[in-house]
Amino acid sequence: MRRATVPLAGPRPDPEGLAPDQCARTPDGDCTGMTSDPALLTRDGLDALLATLHAEGFRVLGPTVQDGAIVYDDVARVADLPVGWTDRQDGGSYRLERRGDDAVFGHTVGPYAWKRFLHPPLLRLWRAESGADGVRIATDPPPAQPMAFVGVRACELRAIAVQDAVFLHGAIVDPHYAARRQGLFVVAVNCGQAGGTCFCTSMQAGPKASAGYDLALTELAGGFLVETGTTRGAMLLDRLPHRPATAAEREGAAAIVARTATAMRRHIPDPAALPELLLGNLDHPRWDEVAARCLSCGNCTQVCPTCFCTDVTDTTDLTGATDRTRRWDSCFAVGFSYIHGGAVRPSPRSRYRQWMTHKLASWVEQFGTSGCTGCGRCITWCPVGIDITEEVAAIRDAPAAPTAAAP
Image (tube, rainbow, N blue to C red; front, side):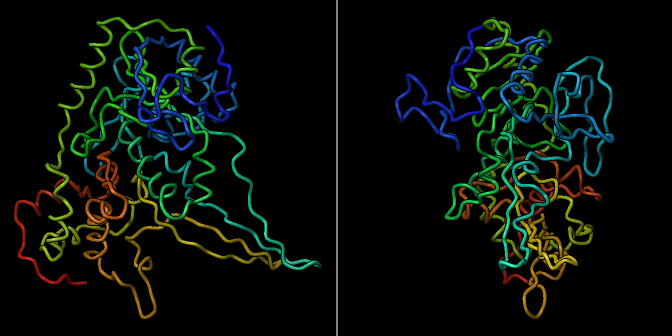
């Protein structure tokens, strides 16, 4: 195979043969949304893909089995992936089971979201130390390696795009997110099964990856159908052992995705109508019903792939040095909305309503897209099984007369 002339981990080259109006740019300037003839990659070829990414200097991250769940961590070879494992998910329920085959990606999503690597749960912003020459402010260096995500689902690609809108494309760019996002290589996986709590079809976010990836895989019985999404992805595929996919393999991959889409058990009809529906029913009695079950634990915000709220804390040690850190926070915490005189949202009712209306309604006005991708994590990891699709249906089926919202 011909070796790429431009390092995959370096600056991305301009695409050849595409006019500017045919090319949608990634945060690194590469062309995305490319189309090419699909290829077939064997399992040995997948091992070669991981090895090549490592050789190019990437920190390679993918799904692994740890502590009874699928979590994202460092991977070096196919054997590190959840080969032969699947997951069973429902409201407040998650467990791993052995499959009857050795599928590599025969599972859906676990409690981790990729945001933990791009928007870390705990980050030191700076450290201040005093000395003979005055106060010295030091910041941690950016990550030494670009990252490669392997096994990214379509709903998670949408979530990364949503966080890009928040951290990269607004009036203020978050430098910590931008440093981690720079050079990111994405290997997507089209879903071969629907999770018990998935509803990505409702949010037009899956199960097939449509954009935001360098390479996309669909797992078949005899290997992986590969589609390229960027010039950099095409360069990497060129260095791997592969062959053109047959018509039967292409049809088989399309059938797998179609079957996954029709197997989803949960739905939110007409998501474009949600802003008007939810913001027009701020005093609906359903908010009281869900508040009676909600524990205000914040699990839904911690596992959500798009939630981005944080708190900033200063800590001074015995030497007088001060660390300023940023950590994930949750709108379900009473103190999150605290201002002088008390919390703006003191009740579970007001906090759940804030989360759901922001996620599905006011987020659209802020960022031009819904904050939900239909991954279903908030349903699976809610200790009492609160189901966001059920809450939407309850308000839609019995709208309340609009009144002034109570706190």
